[in-house]
Length: 270
Image 1 (cartoon, one colour):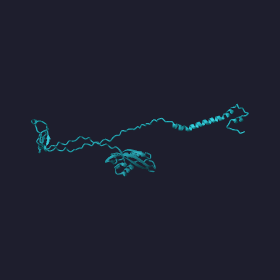
Image 2: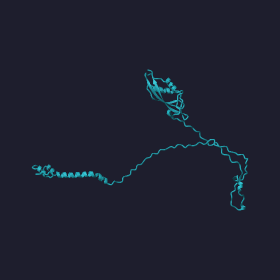
Image 3: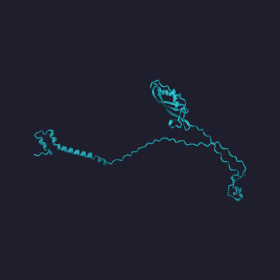
Image 4: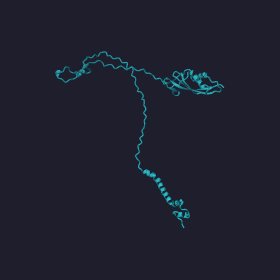
C-alpha cells in the first residue's frame, strides 16, 4: 500500500497498538494545520516587512517647520584717525591797500512824485562816471595819503609737543645700528679684560646675553638667554653693567632704543 505522508493516515499506522491518549498522538495529528498556520503567518510578516518602506513613503508628511537660524554679528568699535588740523599760517600777508581817493556822489533813490514835490533830483550818468556812490556827496583828494592798518598777529597757536618714542627697535630694521665707541673689537677687548672666568678646568662654551642700548647709550634690561653654569651668566651681567656708554641707534634722524644680542665665548685654563 502506497503511503501519502501529506495526509494524517500515517499517524494511525505509526500509533497502531500504542496509547493514543498520549499527547504525542494529538500533536502528530494536528501538525499539518499547525505548519500551514505557521507558513501563512510567516508569509504575512515577511510581506509586511518588505512593503513597510513603500507604505511609509506613501504617507503624506506634515509641513516641516522652517529652521530659522539667527546669526549673531559682533560689532566692534572702530576708532577713526583724528582729522588733520592745519595750523594757522603765521606771518600772513597784510590786506591789500584801499583804492585811491576819488570823488563820491550821493545816490538819490528815484521816487514817483509830482514835479513841485521833488526836493532833490538824482545825479546824471555823466556825474557818477568814474566816481563812487555813497550816502552823501564828498569831494575827493587825489593827493591824500593812504593809510593801511597793520597786519594782525593771528590766533595764538598751541605749543607743539613732540611725543617721546620709547619703542624698542631691532638691529635688523634700524637705520644706524648702535655701536661701542671704537668698534666691536674694543668692546670684546673690554669684556675680556673685565670678565672673571670661573676656576673650573676645561670649561668651554658661549654665554648668550641680550640688552637694550638706550637713547643715551647706556645698557639696560640685561638678560642671560643661555650660559654654561658655574656663574658664567651672572658674571656677564656684572661686566655689561659697568660697560661704558655706546653710540645709540638712529631712526628718522633721532636716537632710539635698540635691542642687541651678544655671544660671549668662555675658555678656562686646563
